[in-house]
Length: 137
Ligand code: DQA
Image (cartoon, rainbow, N blue to C red; front, side, top):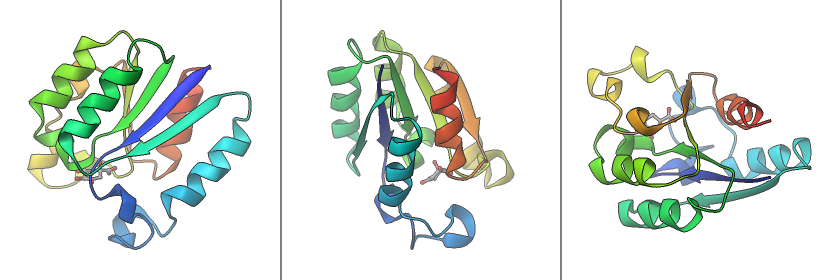
């Protein structure tokens, strides 16, 4: 089974970015623990701060991978283009967020990803990614 974790803008700064919201672990170290926990899965990881690169990655894997776990970060709330890409592919997409966006500012309550997503997992910290992987098993 091939699954891609696709992270959007500023998630490369996890570990130091607003630790009271996002915790103090880097994604690289968390990803290592996911790889060893789910060793039977071919787990890939890609992060970009650039909207077009995220769209290109969705198109690249979206007809061959078994799943995409997408945290589009701030683009979740703004990007018609990423939302359209999610709808355009065959691979099921699980939308994840580290924080519970519904407990935060109103602009974070809107998602352009959710209408095309198979499901949404949010508010469990980094464990949201673990739960999303389990949804594919
Ligand atoms: C986030 C929530 C978004 O509102 C925010 O812009 C992020 C991270 C989360 O994982 O909680 O960058 O997607």
